[in-house]
Image 1 (tube, rainbow, N blue to C red):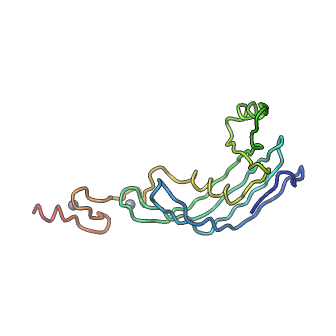
Image 2: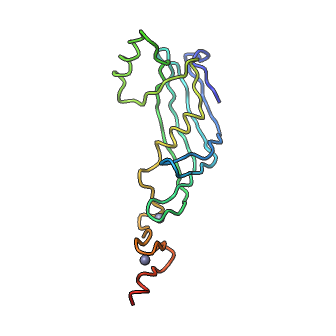
Image 3: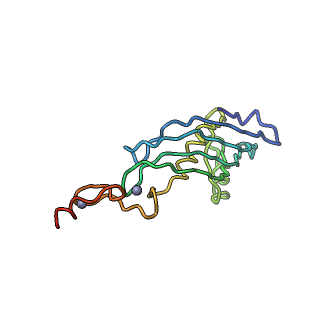
Length: 162
Ligand SMILES: [Zn+2]
Ligand SMILES: [Zn+2]
């Protein structure tokens, strides 16, 4: 789903989408599954670029950083992202804009001034992922000795030591 900056009216464009984002890769080798993703936002023109503000909701399946088991993590995130026109040589104006808006998320439109809502959704899902996902706060993880999942199994090291 593509929004063209040139087509936007001053009042903006409401966007209400259900997207299929597809699996994402996480920390290079880990795959995370993304369920149906809903995106409700408004795209408004702003200083040659656009601003997209709204909310994204999805359920992703990520591996727990302690026990490595996949679990469902709901994502519900509000965002407010500025997209500037792609910078080209001699356009120092954009650099000034960027500095004055450093408190906002800033990205760039592609060379044709288009914004891909699916890419935006993917970015927002990445931003919503915790650094160390945990299936439960009390997750007991894997035994460093035998590798048992201590949530589900009795550790074989303890059994052997008896
Ligand atoms: Zn866990
Ligand atoms: Zn063990």
